[in-house]
Image 1 (tube, rainbow, N blue to C red):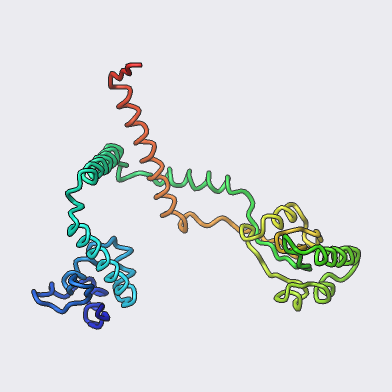
Image 2: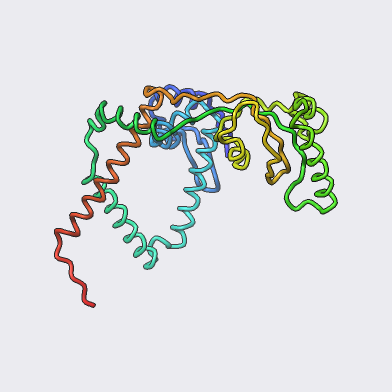
Length: 286
């Protein structure tokens, strides 16, 4: 395929397809066998994309080239399909008709359950935000330190015995010893051992499930462990717990409105379909 050499094309796309449509015989942008894609074809292809996708390719030559390659592959497939007469295949035509009916039905139901433009109101958005905030509960970031002993699942018996012996030794020291010093001396986690085991602040959602369960309800200064994970044994010290406030309504308003509209559309569709079933005289010959 020709490299997307004409920077003028990428520039014009980035400027919102501002240049006039390419005349007949314009430069071929991509070619695969007998299939060609002209500058005008590329313009039409980009213009047909949804706004977000169009923004992603305009001004990005690599993304534009990928789009062209994909369109050439699609046209090659169409060419092969038509050459073999598949579009006249009886089974394919029957399946196509079924798919067409299903697509039309989905469009029809969506049209009947269209959400009003003004929904949701500001009051409804606020209520949904407050409800979500209450449901969210307490969310925190945790600053942890650890002493790690490697014992992966399925480790040979000799390795397991050695790791367990080391863990028992550590357990006897952490209750009254200097955790940071012990981490430097014993931890097998290279990135944190030199820092006294300090892992920094970690979001609760990013913690390994076993770790999250172990520190739940623990107070800062607590030492927990050993905690077994798939990687090994962890002695954990909770250094600090920092509450994470809920995002402001302004930050999540757009997502909240989209979710409420989607929920209302789904409810309206269910109501419409239920009404169709109730209004029709349906009988089944058993």
